[in-house]
Length: 90
Image (cartoon, rainbow, N blue to C red; front, side, top):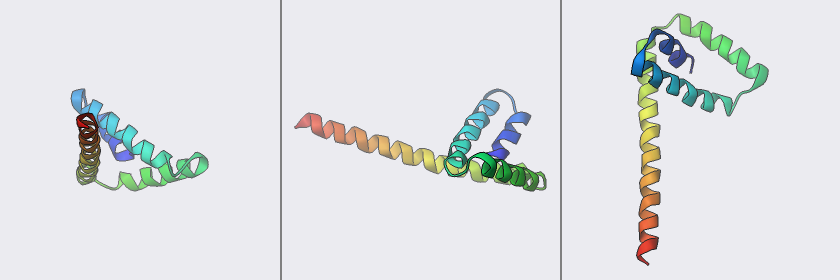
């Protein structure tokens, strides 16, 4: 989440929009398990750790993860569509 946010601050145009969406995606994942003070503390820790790392490798990992999750979503949509078509044929 923080890597996407940091990268979005350095980007423009479509890249910025995509990185902003990635930030929101990852925030949803983080927010579902941490909140309040625990979230703030973890964000502070991760922000400090992120300062010492190059973003390129981390952003590649993030992109690969999001691609996998996007494929999973597409698979669910395809299965639901197939079920609906089967029901309509009955």
